[in-house]
Image 1 (cartoon, one colour):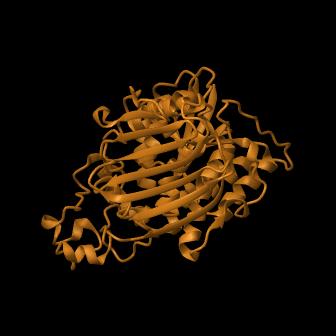
Image 2 (tube, one colour):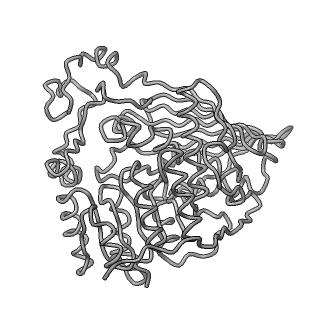
Length: 453
């Protein structure tokens, strides 16, 4: 039985501890949880403890102590994005493998730390890209692997976040790049990973433009919200604001965040029009791939509906895929990113032939049905996967490096070479469209951290 510990017990962590405590309790053991917020930590210990009677809880200051006392095989990292690298590297140095929430980290320096630590320790880092496991996205991969449109030459990819889900990024810690890397890293890592995986290709050069065009003072004035408060709870304009979030209405958000503000000062319902926001809300990116394929990507976080459209142009034709998702606010208890079957389609346009539609595979549950499949792949006994959906640290790195390069391009106005951002990242770590994958193995260069008795 594999033993796990988990650091970071916010809303994202629930998926993991619930899976370990319920569906995979016969094969996996969650030994301990860890968090910076004592109140949220105790809440999780109580809830998970109803299913895991001997579950231990540690403050983040005692992370190394937790590793020493529990001798876990794997550490699950669900903290703020900016601290992922610290916990990943410390876990690797203790001789543990790591499962980390996306993004793997937020900038090139932190990414380099992880690359170096993997090489030195010989341990594994897995990044949980649940979108890969969604049936319809797996179906797209299968179609492209079969060469249905030949060699892919260009991709147009448009992703829309609506004024419920999209707005929520401007209320939370994600609103500052020092925490999240902005939407280009925190959110778009999903999207860049999908393209990298769909193509089985390496991004080499990135150019980008972006700005905060909607969630700003100008729009606040337009809505008559000039004199807004810094948080929804204290705002006298809440009755006239379409973006008002009642932090006390959702039991889950209230339990996880509002009830424990005094512990760490984290305010979950900040105003989406605050001047302290420094991330973009409308973004366009151009990516050149090693194969010569080109990606044009746009992200809008104030759209009327949630979902995306992607168009692959190949030597034998064109594949168009449209997908609409349910709207949600992260942590509110709803199924996150469930697909709307009536808004999901796949259509192929062969050169010189009649276009035709393909019935999309639509799953149920979070992230288009991907969550449950991914959890079984991580904690269960899955069959061999010809699609190679499990992502290692190399793929985790390439997904964020596109966003990191895009951030640099926005700041400089120049194209950025991805390969110059970090060193020592193997190109052969990415599965190709043949379905073949190469295993990456490093000889450990240093001894792991030893725990004192």
